[in-house]
Length: 351
Image (cartoon, rainbow, N blue to C red; front, top):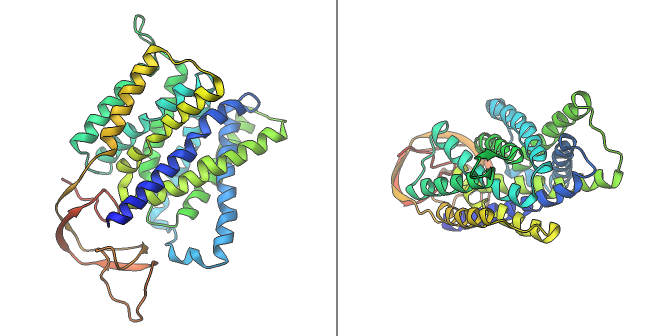
């Protein structure tokens, strides 16, 4: 169990690192590509790139280990696609009128949105340490969003970035409900559907165009790495960590983005930015250092996902013995025990 959690943490951090490069590089590409079209290209790059990977994996039957999406998950799938159309558009609009470092750090507000939505709507538990992290990150986000303390006016670019974070917070929780299914399938649907939706908005409603082929290809490639692979690793992490905890580890992304922004754009940080950065670092520490252990009860349930029989939660028998990871519908008997755990797919209990 602990080994799987450490692996999931690695996936979450890797997802964060891949996403971190998107904001400063997108800022460069936005000089030639309008915001909504840019959002469309990023998601199309993710979906098409992952579709190629799916074809390659299909040759060695690796996909058979994963459970496929069904009609039962359709509401969450539709919600995921709609929110993934809105969020990157808001982000690109915000990024076009604010500095990249500011947008990178503000994106940590996604932790707050994800955690609160996970608690209020999907009944995930939030510890005291995570509550403290939420308060500190919110405070840091307010500092970054205010133009001047004297007039207390909010930056338009920052507000769009925060709106994107709220959309992605809700989207993270929708994806959490799909995370037991095939991550490749999820990313392909997310990328292609959201990309095409944004493309229609860009072309038919906003009349956006881009004629620099090199920039278009660069946006697609950036989308594959920063969105496609990042989302793929993120979904894997959510299986073991839950939505709130995964978003907490994902919080390293803004700091990597900030560092890249300073290097690429020679942006000189203001005093308020440095204060916000320190507060955000403390909040991120509390979010990622949570420990959780108590007696808990697993009700009887039946579901399907990729699993193995050495994780302490899958003791069912097979007519023909199976070793290693595999996927099929299976039942969990009711059991009460105690161990360290996260809000993964088997620990969604209330407190």
